[in-house]
Length: 191
Image (cartoon, rainbow, N blue to C red; front, side):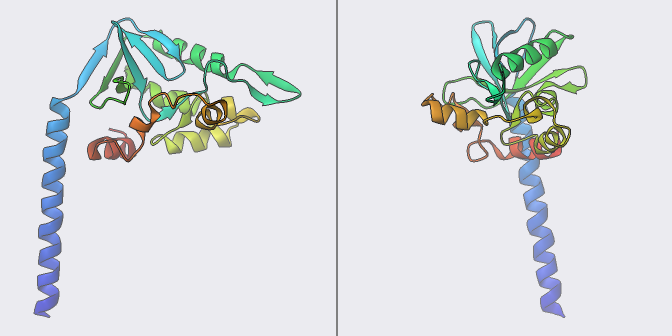
């Protein structure tokens, strides 16, 4: 019985240390957070420009501007549609984008909000972008509701870039392997 008590005690101590470490990481991460607000120029469905710097919407991947979706009987410019959808969301009210990490192109990886609306999540929920490391639930809802890209045939943006021989546009910096632990937890818990 004493062995079981020691194992439980060690587990509680270990879990407590993990929670403490996560709280310290959260504090350090919050101190490094960069907030950007004001006027944004929409470059494409997941990239913004503000004050000469580029911002990449974290956790999502939108079609390339030249990308077409659909099948042989019906093509539509999904890359342009995605850009227009992001423009509409960015122009709706005061928007603030914040993030702590940068991709390999030195773009700040951000989550943008307009009041209580997570714009990144809205892009995936409306089917104008796909989940890329976060927003899996929103992608399932868009797919189930056949919203946006999910209304017909389309090629995932990363597959399109690979097939076209285009650069990865810094998406390697958004993957779970290079995000901080807190960023991953935030994505899962929607902080």
